[in-house]
Image 1: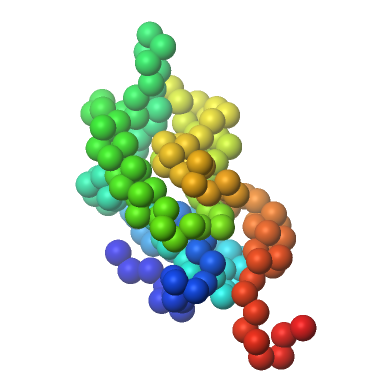
Image 2 (image 1 turned 180 degrees about the horizontal axis):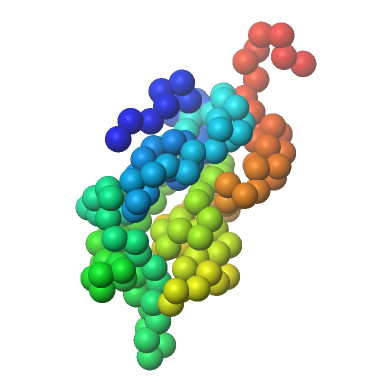
Length: 172
């Protein structure tokens, strides 16, 4: 998978923003498509952007069967549309990503709403869109308290403008 290199900066000195890779244009969704958000790219300039896709790291290919949360007898699992329980491997990938992000101390994340992995306010459960977070989002939240979906670009803009590093040249 290739990510936009123009967004790269030194991770040691530049504030880090975590972004769902599909929002950056990577074709990593279950259907082989991207959900690129062109309006997001200028907001990320000046920050170290770390693209993430927990489902790819979990070994789910592209394309792949769609996944969703399912509940049965009070227990929850992430299951593919062909009935495979992917919860353990998705959990491992989410933990691995969060552990790798912790030293970077991300200032925020912009994640794909309604994704079973990355949903911020909504996800899929038993065939319906419901209030709730994706598995990765829930694991990331204790280490990155500012979580946004791609549907909250104005909030993202306000948050990042207030934290954009100064270039030192011609800035007020």
